[in-house]
Length: 123
Image 1: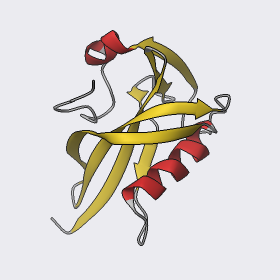
Image 2 (image 1 turned 90 degrees about the horizontal axis):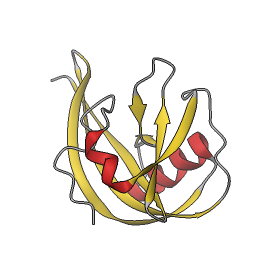
Image 3 (image 1 turned 180 degrees about the vertical axis):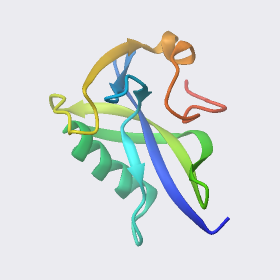
Image 4 (image 1 turned 135 degrees about the horizontal axis):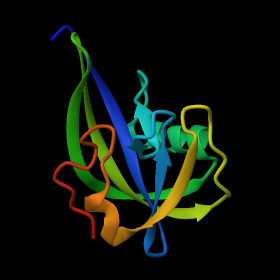
């Protein structure tokens, strides 16, 4: 592997529902993205959630680790964090075409674009 990047995703929980983003190709996604050089996972996650949704959240704890090949020579290794919604109205960026709030019990039944919920430990 020539290059390894770090990524972060968020299960943003509001009451008993969580935020699901939908990409232009129709696949489901969670807020998050790449960790930039010099950023902590938490700073990157707050930045990505703000950029992609406009929401403010409180990061609780890691709930899953995952990895995928972005391209043949780039491995993305990441962590999904449980987050609690604090405030804001969802304002999507151009990366996503729409969103919905799903019941937390449905999380295992949705197919996401990558295995960003692999070995999920959400409680």
